[in-house]
Length: 253
Image (cartoon, rainbow, N blue to C red; front, side, top):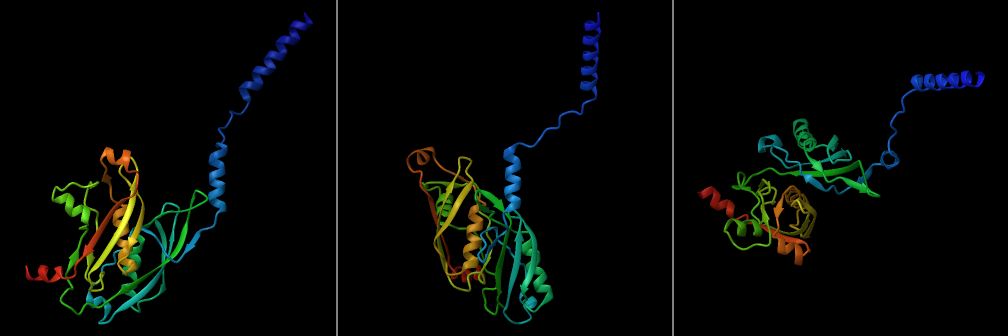
């Protein structure tokens, strides 16, 4: 009888302990914890040459320059995703309103994320801007993305790949420094048609112009024929030529 009473008491004690015990909390997986700790432990990447996903497009007119060329350097801090979280003037144009226009353009732009040991980290970098006073007839001349592949695609010619939409690009004669420019580039795409690993193979001679074109390509999507995937798993190539002489034709039309 005593053994039976003791057994019942133990069962009641275990039941009470189970009822009043705190529920087990889910702990983060070791992998997730390690990634957070790893990202927090890595310092921001410092560079003097930013790679842009969306290049800054400051809006200004001749009168904003106060009758002369202007230059500035902007210090930029971007988070792990490439979004700009801070932008400050390192070297001023000398005009507060113009500096503010530059900062506004930078803050809505994006850079390519930086990876250290396969982990995305914040980036600190500097971008220079040269704003030139337009005193020529090409002030209102504009250029969009008219690459060799895009033009062939519009003419229904046979091409290795097709852009799903025309890459977004808006350049002026000032961006070309009033000279014709040519660029060549290559890139890879994933199975979803997203552009990866864009590389400049021939520069225009103007770094800012090169960055704007590469940013437009990086944001593009393309379709690649299946046979190209099977037999030519190499880089896709394209080139673009900006002819300053077309400005005269635009103004005469």
